[in-house]
Length: 358
Image (cartoon, rainbow, N blue to C red; front, side, top):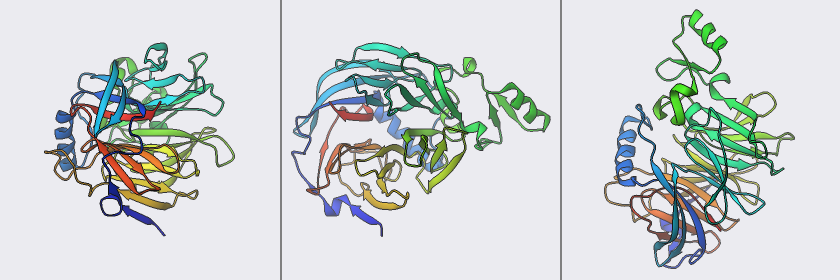
């Protein structure tokens, strides 16, 4: 039976949260959140999220900050080009994605090493393999998931949605990175585009024209072989992808458009953020819904957000604590044991994507 938790009714709002005065790293994709919110509301009306035309790459920030007295108190910032996700390595450094490259940085935000790939575009999430030697990156701009070796920077595995059943796009266009496949589709009378990253660049295919739009992916070890668990934003599904042959199995069908934030919590449950519904899902080991945390009735939304919800992701810290990144309310900390939450106000123009405790 699904446990439905209405945070506004069942949790108490406290002025001093459980993460008060904790040092954090906050990833800010861009510094135009007010304008972005207007576009998101317009996208909701059209029922299709994302841009149809390319826009300039934004300058974002890595922020070292503390949560205190209802505010995000900044210690320092460093500029990056549309950073989205951060992951801590075993050596104490961090992996931070930019729009078209992966950086290894130290605790001060200094870049120690960078990784590039022709099909790195509009990079989203990053995960580190159990061996510590490989990183898994979601390249949303090319409907792809790519693994690289962190020692050499070489690709060790890749998966393009276009080659695995996710074609054509909504307008009937068939995408491919293979000249032979492209030629075959043309000979069948299909409208086909050969995707050359030299032409599409660091953002890849525009957001609304992507076929699957993977938003996040993690390594999955529970089925006897290493596989990938991915959220496909335009399809509203959670898929398990075989690293052996690229085939996929739908583990959960019914995600909201543009779901984000896949995590395995300490109890081996799968956590997924229903971004446009304002919900946080906890799935059991059979990928059945165990709990739904509803943020949509919480007070404190900024003016102009109307009835739209956009929770970028909820980051579980342990069994009892989590951080929710809410574009319309701020950074929300949850204490599941005490049934309490706190809201902290960031810079109103920050488009926050990720956060972790240092």
